[in-house]
Length: 490
Ligand SMILES: [Zn+2]
Image 1 (tube, rainbow, N blue to C red):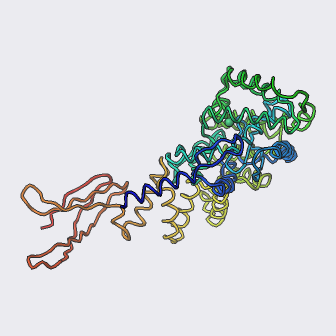
Image 2: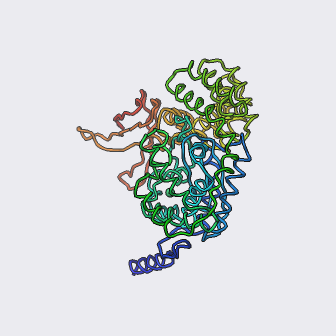
Image 3: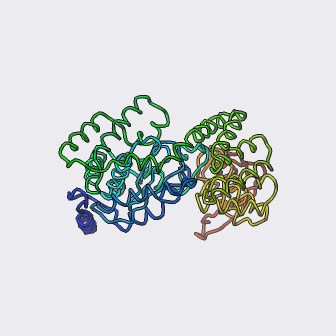
């Protein structure tokens, strides 16, 4: 009976999950409702942008322009969604769409384009990903949900902050770096070009864009390969597909070369400053502090309004153990861009080292509201512990303890220290058994990174009369970290 009922429920669930794709008109499986799509987009858009470098705020008119082009295409798409378009402060050429129409393009892709029509080709492609629900389809197929959604540490791509363990943005981070598959990419190229024509653009822009991609990928610049080409492999096939479709489309749309040049003039002019910054980040990551300082200085001289450059200079000072000068650089960075997590995180960590607990706490808390990181939570744990707020400290350490790497281990150790007396069963396993002589023994396993001493083992047993009795045995000595030991229960 039970089995049949379950089977019926599954069938009806599958039936109700078949929906018509608003872009292609085809019927397809969807286990993710539109409401869920909208919720994922709304929740993940901000942290996903933070994790990639934050919004590009030096030239807000540029974002307004990109948004204008995007909305012109969104208006003719087959699905009404709360579309949004942002420019991310990241030199890696990349663009992505989250479910619900939340779309971003990196600064580094804009500088590789030549016309508004090419920009429209990028945004049209991403609009189709959102409109056709490609992200939701991947989720329905279970592609995304397998790999560590909970508490996974995801490196922040292309930002140069790769050693930061980002937390809690698992699904968003996966959605923006996933491969949709060749069919979805072909669909996005195809309908993206139709949207371009509907919006009055010359679809030639989509062919030019693919040619540019192929040319650039032949040079195999590492930036390009780590960015959008990881999820969008450029190929002659994509060029040919676009050319074939172009031949069937009406001619004479807008290319917008002059307008694109005018709107991106500032960005193009400051590109050498950002190149210097990227090289400087790379140098610092390799421990070449002198080169990093020189390049940060050069970048600041060329574009004094960019917060990232002061962030790099702050990191250089910090590396040299010049904490107060580092603080000044982060002050400048937060004043230029008060909406990016990284400067608060770094200033908080410096404040912690300078024993400015209140300042450290306020900065670190602000950083985790923008983007949760293991680094911030670990330091918040340390600060709470120093203040004697032990439950709060345990809460912070528990978040970090699941993260891979040194920080996760450290936080797990701190959590064990604070929580072991209250919840020994969470950390230590005890099994009863007999040894070779037939004596009752307790096997105590300690998988934690801390040695454990002064154990008391409670033993419950039924006596000859069938009554439950309990005795306690105390043991001297320690069970070393990661070891197990037998204790004679006597
Ligand atoms: Zn794509």
